Image (tube, rainbow, N blue to C red; front, side):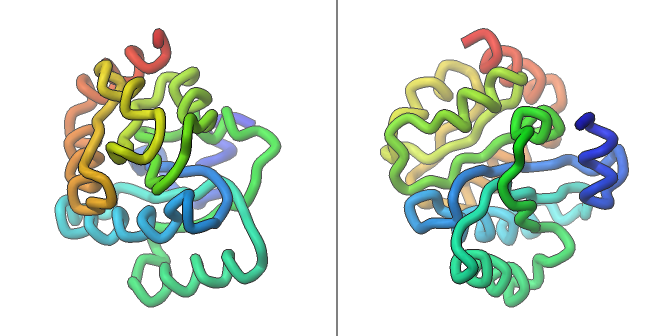
Length: 174
């Protein structure tokens, strides 16, 4: 799968900036915080030039909860769960920014995978082992649970392509 095929599947054009998260639709992975970041980004940077993509799945109940929150937050146009993928690296490569909204994640491999394809990472402090990697210029670490701060960090990366590229390259080389 290439970038064009992923964008076609999502129904977005080349100008759309993709923000991704990945994992089980489970409390500790923070899919609800992912939705809150999308809502906050709409306030911080209201231009409809971005799309949030959750890569991963869960139970029918957790998927229904995710879709319920998206719908009631009026985010159906910019947030979607694409389910588990056999080619997640291709999906990560299509992203502009990878966010890790996890509450608890000792050392998430999804971040290493996103870093391996040159994606900057935004994560929470005190949520596991990722801040040590990210604070070495690979993205940004924000206060635990602060969806607004995460949205602001994402907006800063989206609005500064040179910084986004530099952070992605730093991540790739780490």
